[in-house]
Image 1 (cartoon, rainbow, N blue to C red):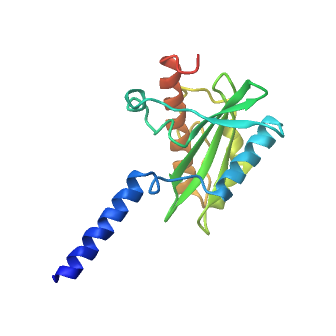
Image 2 (cartoon, one colour):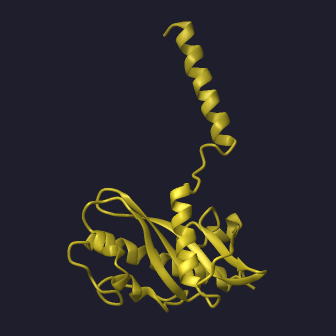
Image 3 (cartoon, rainbow, N blue to C red):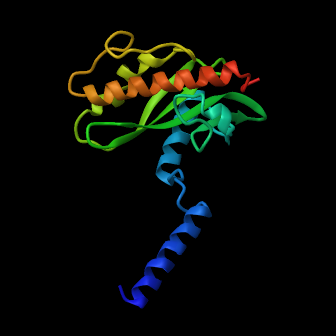
Length: 185
């Protein structure tokens, strides 16, 4: 390798490291996804004006949860200084890609609504049907969900439906861990 090439590789790596460490490499919520989250909050909580307050979970408590909590994925829905509930934003695998979903919680940590926000596959879109997703409504933190037992199966969307069921199951377990540690008090 020539001297000039070594310098280019080193300077490229240095630039990447600086950008990554400065937060540039950290995932951010895209404007399209944010618009879908805002719409889900507005229709579910029946509010026009609200604030999504990001909830931070310390690393020690986060290690006890089955899913990552408190990055850019857990929010308190605030209107006029009062909490209306909580929002969890997640990703789950489909057959060849991932999809973005949201779980909206009542203040008692029961599910108010779940919704697929962005689905990136041609097949399996039935998982986004509100008719199917309404099965999650009322489920509480700590409750167990099993695909095919607690949650009906979907023909043609088996992988995505299993994935969504498991994802919501893990979110409920994680909310239970936070609740047991008096996180929401």
